[in-house]
Length: 190
Image (cartoon, rainbow, N blue to C red; front, side, top):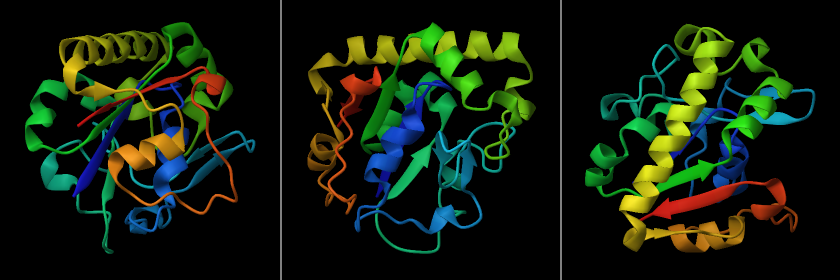
């Protein structure tokens, strides 16, 4: 079983994934040697699946970084462009939205092209291409949410998201991640 994740760079989608990642129901073996911290602000944990990165965003790649058991979180920015295709797999899809300007600003504040994992330089190449990709990914996510409104819910926090995904809430020492306080919107297609 997979949980598919997408969001534009800077949408804080990695923090949404992190908010459920430590659930005992999640296979965390993809985190080996793939954690990146930037100034204590951003944490990229586990494998990322995108063109030019370590793993492509194709179903044949999804199991490669894992060796354990449990539900596997598959994170890909470019899933945003394939939502109608991947919904046919029947897995839950978590989509994180934040407005374009805030995404671009946060992505740069968090390290931009200077972070070491995942590697954004190969696919996104430069600031202009990154800006265009953020806009396109957000547009495609919101179009999918609108077109599939009857099957999309909006969890308000990581407890609500765990409940909707039918996974155990992780031991986070009581830390609840309220999405509106982070200026993000989370959508779940089930």
